[in-house]
Image 1 (cartoon, helix red, strand yellow):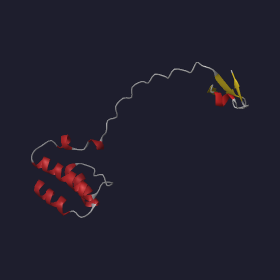
Image 2 (cartoon, rainbow, N blue to C red):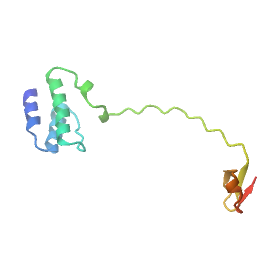
Image 3 (cartoon, rainbow, N blue to C red):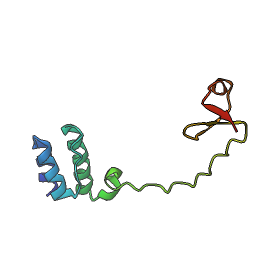
Image 4 (cartoon, rainbow, N blue to C red):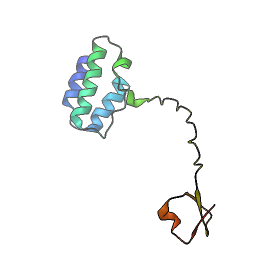
Length: 109
């Protein structure tokens, strides 16, 4: 079975054939965004590992079922405690700078 599978993979001429062989015999979804030779090489590697009696799950690319790491809790950045300017029309607060303080629509709070 594996030898004929390897021959079929080598003889395949398009990505659809390679994808069908990968799903049917190896249980792997081929990534069609990759080139045909890359897909063929990956499937051949899996087929040879299966023929040798190796574990196909260990050689299978991890992109099929990625496990996202848990994000660490990020502490909030410390609030600015210096001089502030307030926009008179929309109420937004800005840290005080000399250039911003020159604007007539910003008032110090």
